[in-house]
Image (cartoon, rainbow, N blue to C red; front, side):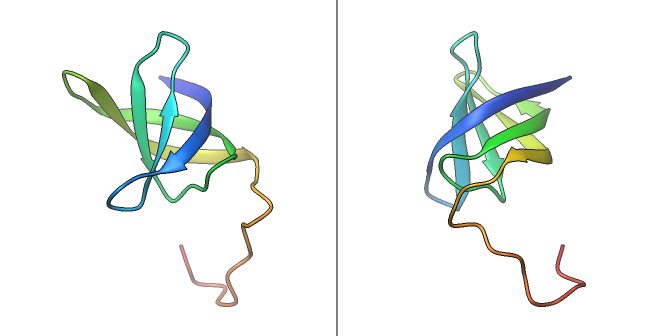
Length: 72
């Protein structure tokens, strides 16, 4: 299921941390603080969830486009 959330900070390992409307913590790779993103849950743990980035709805001012067109 896809959900939209705001990334609050980057934690150890480089994953972004966001909080769903129900209060559950979500960790998402490839995001920056302040971004509004749409994610899809991949794993559910006792105290948090892991999710993949589907799209960036509103990018952070610090986000830059990679110079290489093949960068994922």
